[in-house]
Image (cartoon, rainbow, N blue to C red; front, side):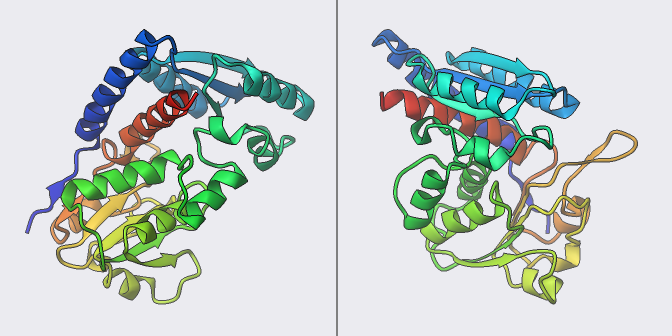
Length: 281
């Protein structure tokens, strides 16, 4: 058996095309969507992510506004900037690029972003709305992962989904999104007992642990959908996911590659959230 490769680049390109068309219509009506990205410090990986987001904005008709603060910036500096962007009617989405320097409380700063501009979906109000099943901003990577699962099958009702990871950024919202699709969801993590046996029960297996190829091929249920969220850079520069792709692809029905799977969807969903916010103004 050879798994279908779920092409995140292709799906993201299609989504960006839809976003560009809607953004053009909105701009013609007098509102150009605007995304502000705040970066504190000089993290090389963050610099690449920010540059990719800015480029994606330009290609879809969304205006981008970069705000780069030095690593020495105080909590008050970041707070004042967020408040200013909250009040700016030309800004529809605000993204605080993580990580931030240790002296700045990322959760506190995220909580200052106006919920309707919280395109990362991390404001407590948006998290609460997700849990309650109410409309709101949804974190980009889980949102993109769900879209990739739905490329394989639209009806997820009754399927057993195992999510390895419990972070606020991905694991917890991913579980909530799958619950909303009527999946039976098991939230696993580093301290879960008998993790391989649990994974073998999963119709949908989502791995987000940050450990290269931790999920072995024999952990995968034959015919499962496997979503690999991990991006682990090796000493030679090669990127590996959290799943042993070569082994798992011989057993699964469908699997995302790394790179080229979930990654492109994260940025596409960020643009979608920005457009959604602009359309509500």
